[in-house]
Amino acid sequence: DGGITQSPKYLFRKEGQNVTLSCEQNLNHDAMYWYRQDPGQGLRLIYYSQIVNDFQKGDIAEGYSVSREKKESFPLTVTSAQKNPTAFYLCASSTGGGSNQPQHFGDGTRLSIL
Amino acid sequence: KNEVEQSPQNLTAQEGEFITINCSYSVGISALHWLQQHPGGGIVSLFMLSSGKKKHGRLIATINIQEKHSSLHITASHPRDSAVYICAVSGGTSYDKVIFGPGTSLSVIP
Image (tube, each protein chain N blue to C red):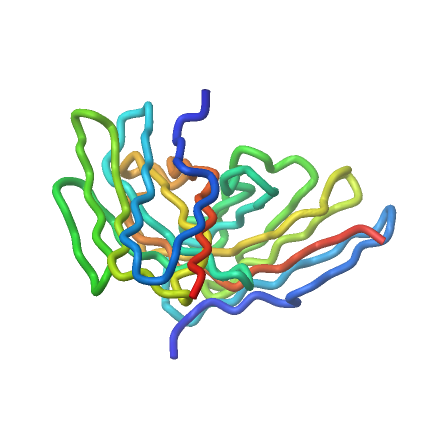
């Protein structure tokens, strides 16, 4: 079955540590996204990528970094510069054509601070 | 004021009840999306609308472009419908122009 796989499901970060969240899709989608979800708030866009080797900052990119070396993979690194990283992180993908295409989501990674 | 608002924030219903969740938005859009977030966190896309009404099983979504309002209806609700329902609006060809509402948490009691 085609879909998006996020790992790990739960992740803990120590102070000053960088951690990387994995996102893999086998839907052959060109576009991929990373969102952050906090209680009571809508999803907020961290980074997105329209094609391989290209990515753009979203609304809350500070303290995060991404890469898009392969079409199927879009890992997100939460750096030590992100002072409030505790949140639920969702990866999504869509076909090309902009934001009007339905996005397919992974099951998310919950990141907490030790 | 948030660009996408939903009401109610929380909703508890008895099994079998007809449920309505509302979404209003204040920006120009090309499409409106309804999403379902399961208790485990995964999100599924239910509908994408640009006009009129769509139906899938017991779910019906409507949109009124002039009034900038959409509703999601669930007929004959069931405990398995318990989830967070999220409204989102998108603005067209720009990939970053999706704005998500805060979600409506629905609990259906047997």
